[in-house]
Structures are given as structure tokens and as C-alpha cells.
Length: 241
Image (cartoon, rainbow, N blue to C red):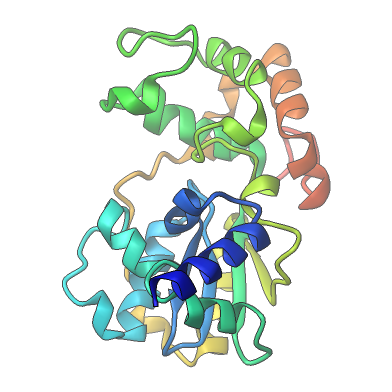
């Protein structure tokens, strides 16, 4: 049985362009709702997970209160039942979806939450930056520019790497119209809108902080997240939504 599970985990890892150790961070499998959510940090993920896990009601989710806890994410992801996940990943009756966010706002949100206001040194530990003390947004971006995108912390890794083009999505929502797009997801899954469970503990209102982006910062973001702008059709304008 263990060898069979290992086989499916490796197939899933190749499909998602990830290592097995990342699978619990990259996917949420909702077997009763027949849905798979490919997660993107800093894009309302906690609200999406909390709402759909409650609506799914699968027994293996009993007792989960922190949806970002390491043990919880193993239960939520392909690791919970790799064969069932692989089956749903390619089944026409399964609804596969994800959400994306404007790269300017997403990187501001990650910086404010994990660097400027973050208290966990592991999130602040980047080459050339100490675990404590003030780190400017510019210095943060310069550090990211020197990193390989695939090795970045997933809170600021390009969304184009987090959402594998090899997985056929049925729907790709946008953070900028979250209420409308998440309502579509709920309708597709037969979940009442009243079931939405808001989890806003890491909300940073990033769009209100775009004045942090000067000409140099904008050039850095445009370069680091160029594929995100192109693939997800976001314009490289600070006046855009």
C-alpha cells in the first residue's frame, strides 16, 4: 500500500511541477465537493479554505482550526489521499480552480505581512538580510531579484510557478473581484454564499500602499514578476486595478 501511495504522490508532484514536500502547500482536495483548489499565498487563501473545508465536511478534516498549520495542510492536500486526488485531478466532474492577484499588490502584501511587520525570523531570513531590524521595500526587492524564482518563499514566489500550466483549470478567479468570483465558485459547487467564513488575520490592504512603489521598485517588480503580468493579463501600470 505504501508503495502505491508513493507512486501516486510522485505522479502528482510531476503534474504540479513541484517536489513531494511542497504538495501539502500547493493543493487543497475537497473530495465530497469534488473540487481541487491550487493555492496562491496572499490571495485570500485562508477564507477560501475555511469556507470550502467547512462545506465539504469530510471526516478527515475534523478538528482542523488553523488551515495553515503544517499537519492540517497535509490532511487538506493530495497527501491526505493521493490516489483519490490523482483521480479527481483528471476527472471531468471535478472542479479545479485557483485565484491570482495583481503582482504589485501581492508583493506589497507579502512584504508588509512577512517582512516589515513579520515576527517570525524564518519568514525574514533571506540572503543578505538579517532576521531583525528594518528592511526597506527596495532592499527586499533587490534580494528577490538575486534569487531563482523557483527557490523563493512561496509567499512571494511568482504565481505563474505556483499554478502549473500543466493542470487544466476550470476557473481562475481574481482577487480584485473576489466577491463575484468566489460567489461563482460557491455556486458551481452548490454551496450557499452565506457559508463564507472570513479569515482576515493577515489582511494588509496592499492596494492602499502603492505609494511604496517608486520608479526603481516598479522596475524591479516588473522584471521579477514579468511572467505573472503576461500570463494572467495584468497591466504594468500602478493606476490599473
